[in-house]
Image (tube, rainbow, N blue to C red; front, side, top):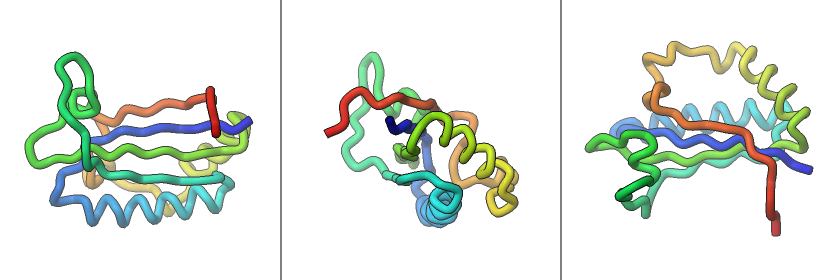
Length: 117
């Protein structure tokens, strides 16, 4: 059964091009190391909530947009191996203070598929 890592981040609108560039690079590296699929998405219809919402979850600020991303693996075991390789890959080493998003407000987790159609 497959396994999915999901991510939600706030990206300043002025940094979308830099975020896209980083995401393309990261996606190629994840796929190279064995991920099945890599998706990066920018919010288009992401309303604020009253109790919970994507904007609230990342403490969205004016001038920012929500990015929602996921990576698909063959299994949790494969994900753990792949992520270890990706995290050690020198092509992705960077000072997170210079990232095109605020890593401190990133939400992420690993998920077992419940329904796949």
